[in-house]
Structure formats: C-alpha cells, structure tokens
Image (cartoon, rainbow, N blue to C red; front, side, top):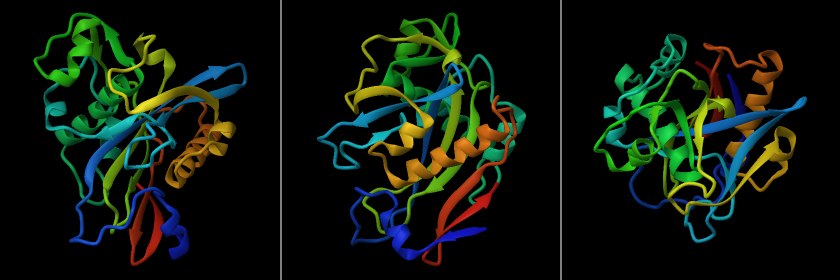
Length: 246
C-alpha cells in the first residue's frame, strides 16, 4: 500500500473547494476511458469541461458522471464479464452485482450524453427511461462485455462534491454509433483524441493524471487489456492518500 503526503492530497481534485458543513457521503460515479490505436500510438478521448461549471471548469476529463437509479433497469446485449464483475463487487463498501451493473451502465450512458458515442451492438432497443432514448433512436443495444475495470478513486472528505468513481476502459471499435455533433448535453465544450503522453500534459485534474499513469502501466504489460487485470484503488486514510490493489 503506497501513500501520498497531506500536501499532495490537497492538490487532488483541484477545483473542488473545501466544504464547511457535515461530511458528505461519496456518491457512486463512473468514467469511461475510450481508447483508439493509431499506428504504434494509443489515443485517449478527452473533453474540456464547460467554463461555466462550478466543478473543475475548463479542465480536460474523461466522459463520466454519477450513477442514476434508472441505470439499474436497462437491458443489455451482453453482461459484464465475470472477471470484471468480481473486481467491481470486491473491496471497501462491497456492492451487489446489480449495483455493479448499474455503475458500469452509467459509464456507457455518460459517454453518449457527453461525447455522442454509443457503445453496444446495433439492434432494436426499447426503454422508457429518458436518459437512454438516444440508444432507442439510433438502434443500439448497450453492451457491458467490452468494459474493463481500470481503477477506483474516492474524492477526499471536505470537498463540495464527493464521488466513489469507478474508471472503465473500452476501445473505439466497441462504439456502434458516433454522432458527429457530440452528445446532447453541454458539459464538454471540446472533444479531442490525444496520445497518452500528451494527455498527461494537458490541463487535467491530478487524479486524472494519476489514472492515466495507471492505465499506461497496465497497457505496457497487457496491450489488449484482457479481462480480470489488477485494479488500483485510491482513497484517503488518516490524512494520507493510499493506493491499494483490488
């Protein structure tokens, strides 16, 4: 288990001001790191957060957001692979397989909403859930089998917003539909595909840079991102940010 100093902790999630009230319980959230190959390089999709946002304005981030209750009731073309589900349901604050499924689905939904990319298979899809109507309109069945669980991180206490975020990865080839105008929300002003090294040099939150480094390490040993890889977990324990392996 590795640790960070208190000063380094204070720099994590820069842009989230200290919270002076009661402790905030972190909410489940999910992020998708979408990858593409260009020759010998691996590119990653990032978007710049809208300048008007109170939380990390102007920062480049991966598509993502909090898990909604409706995400648990969405039908899928393929489920999470058993190796990925096992990692998701393990560790601190163990969750049920159904909650793990909802968290993974929220990563797919947020990638559509923010980037206009629908991950799944072409085919008839029906739901009355408002946030999933893009999949209905474009005939895409969401699919969880392509997702790889890459990392987990919990926002430190005393922040305006706290999330228990699961970081997933998938390949651009897993996208069934790419909307040319991006997603229906205005959360990301600019979408770019960056080589991993350049992405780490962009204006990104510290935790995002940490996760990118974790991803590069995993890709170096497993370029195909096979199921069941080790998952680093970053959280604050007694004023030190520690790294555990799930």
